[in-house]
Length: 208
Image 1 (cartoon, helix red, strand yellow):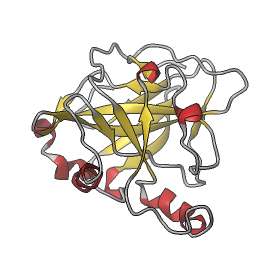
Image 2: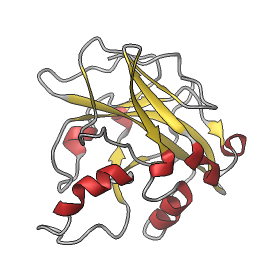
Image 3: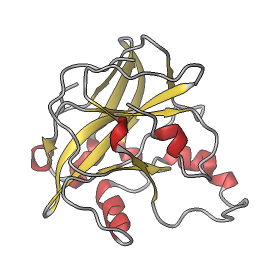
Image 4: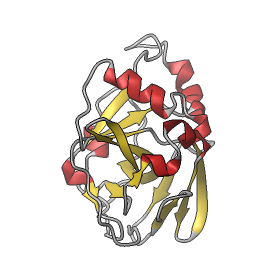
């Protein structure tokens, strides 16, 4: 699978992803949230880590494991500086398709190369601040065909709320990145890709 164009930006710290932060997917999972093992909806953000081995520069190929169903999704990342969020990056969050969030998703999400990096970190003030991010829509194309529009107005927690809730139980250091989640398609899954596919992610104010 390929991404495009050339990248110059790399994360300077740990990249954290967020699960269930879009209204559609949260609603689809709601009936199961009161069942074992948790028996109630999550009260804090549900996070996972994208380890450094997953980082793939824009325009570089991502090797897909043989026989695995692999899905892609667009996400927006908050890049931390010394005084808070300093910039925003687009990501292609790649994962092996799986049915459960009950186990830490390391095996499905931390495969080598499974985080496509946007080519730039856009300064937050250039985008109008955290509250303005809700106005953004991110488009995902596969092989030049539009497959999904992610509307950030449909976040469960907007960027400022998510950041504040995460910082209640852990510290984010300069260089760390907090991804704000990925949305599912109407049927509950994410876009599947195959060897040879090209994925492009676009949003106003960002390079593809």
